[in-house]
Image (tube, rainbow, N blue to C red):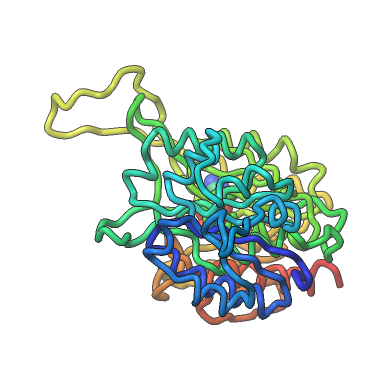
Length: 399
Ligand code: C5P
């Protein structure tokens, strides 16, 4: 993974998250990339040309016109860049980009660029959910741009929700993975990953679900793809989006749909990792109409869902099979029991007792078990955890 010598054009627009761009620039420069920053006039209310140019070691521009009748050539930067990143990308800049409203230096440069374009949106939660933003992000994706989705968390307004610009670390990883040649340790392998929760319908509007975010599975998919694998990612409802081009994503809703999709690919898979939090039970019958609140109590009969991983274990021919165990008691014993029962090669235990581990968090703390080995890891970001998992898998699988 190397971005040394790469020419990275960063366009900063007028959002509070602009301050984070300093960290991104510093990271790229440290890794040996060349960084040219341009900015919208409005972004100068948030960050200064001076701080950005000091870190990027190049002059920063926000205007077409320089001193003494000179012209700042947007065409030159657009053609110079190996990659362009618009971060933070405001709702306004996004709209101008996809509709060709070319009224500033950033948009003119963007419209002249022939290189891949990454967009890291940042805005308040309601703006992010607005149909115009959603449609504009879809249009940007149709143009072939890569969206680095906004994250959930506290926003500048004080509200909490999706809209925070992805952390510089995430943006940097997306760029690095883009430049990583497809010659890793998993070159030629197909890796099947399940992720996210499943939703089991009760009636047309309700379902049984869980708090899984899908982050662990998506991080595993990115890591496998970076190592050269072809990745089949089967995910239940999750707001995560894959970045790496070697990830084929299939979105499903229920456990039955997940099972069906998994077995479409399982036979020709070299390795399968089940990180999905599959609902163990589903309503026996799905009401055709919305259930009315007539009675004081309501009984819904549930029947067992298929155990996707167990079925993979039963039908294993050559696949290296990895499962997850989320336990609250007798953790190690239960995890090892599942390793045997589901015919796995490896199981990853995360305990709900560990703060920062498990559902919805950006971090996780894991223990890995095989039939003969055990390894314990510290609390880390899920991206780092995915690296640890594949480093460990490689000692078992590629030995
Ligand atoms: O038995 P338990 O649900 O604790 O096992 C967890 C592991 O099994 C996880 O890897 C999960 O993805 C997988 N699983 C599955 N299908 C189910 C239930 C769990 O693939 N119905």
